[in-house]
Image 1 (cartoon, rainbow, N blue to C red):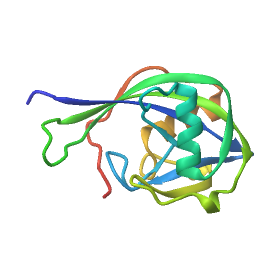
Image 2 (cartoon, rainbow, N blue to C red):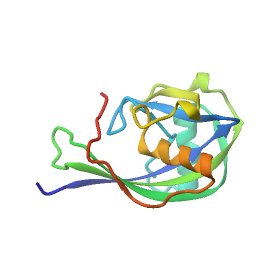
Image 3 (spheres, one colour):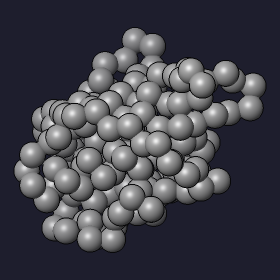
Length: 160
């Protein structure tokens, strides 16, 4: 069967403290039921840095400052949706390191694709409970190296 891609480009921020990483609880899309990184699509007339600032406020309730770019990567996973013809999601993402400025995750809203933010110890993150973006971030935190090689998942399970 021929693969048909839904292409998504997203901008995500990495906010860490000690051994914990700030993640969101994803409740929609191919990463539903897993931890994901705060971030998302660039809106019209918005820069990548503006996207991170907005998405962090929307998804976590936090104000952050961008420290620098970590890298970009391609992920391909099986994903279908009713009413669409795609068979896979080709997710292109760019990661930036961010620094906490203000706010508290207790004010993180339940929005259309996230049911709030949580600080989680990186030792608890694995492929069963996290998106590929979180796993790439965990590897970067542990090794100080960002692996830019594309990854294609063949047996991805959506946990809706």
